[in-house]
Length: 331
Image (cartoon, rainbow, N blue to C red; front, side):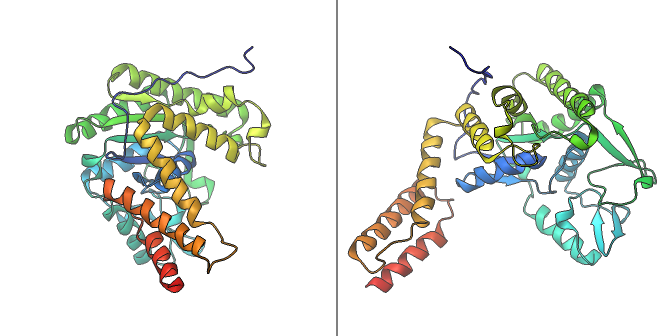
């Protein structure tokens, strides 16, 4: 007896592993997935522009990365005691324009040549609704709570999204022909738009991605995060208290489906080893002066050295140094 409808997810070939570098851009859902990938030591850069919701702002940000561009002065606004960039999330905002620029440069300097190096670009669309600044006609990534009268709001068309991404993806493949593009639609509902409007928005995003898949079947993939929450987990117990965001249990379930579909078995086993080390590091011994605890610390150091030998780019220095410091005290 089947008690729920199951969403089929085809495995990719070749699957991803620890030798692959990833870039993740888009809504707060991609931030959640990115944190988990970084937490298991995968080489993954997450939202260098901050959280982005609409397809055009994500495409614009990818264009800036390709051309090594920084925002110009007409992109900056001063509001409520802070300087903001209309192309960046509020996390970058600062009391002075110099600090704002420093925050932006620090993030983008870490992304030099990133599109040439990655194996996979994961893009999560959150909403098809955009805000255009009336002064320039440009779609903004974030309104930063500026007065509504400064913007015009509209919903993108499927054709507009497809045309934009045909251009930006082609530009990416010119510098990195083997890069695969993995699209998702955020399962988080934008209830402020209205529930019907949210459905229209999500449908627009899904149709655009499907058309891109048909145009580039060998390089464009779709991970059904939206369908997993809407269909497999269609119960409010899988939502947070706001009844909009997925609960921790739901995110963990989607994460497991994601890694199973797209990562090699070796990579998944390595993820578990990294989690085991982290769990061991969190252990609080009843007898911190005992020989048993010393052996426990040696086990952690051995596990770290084994993984670091296999993956030299793993950053376990703090954990290893902490264990060795405790061992020195015991001796």
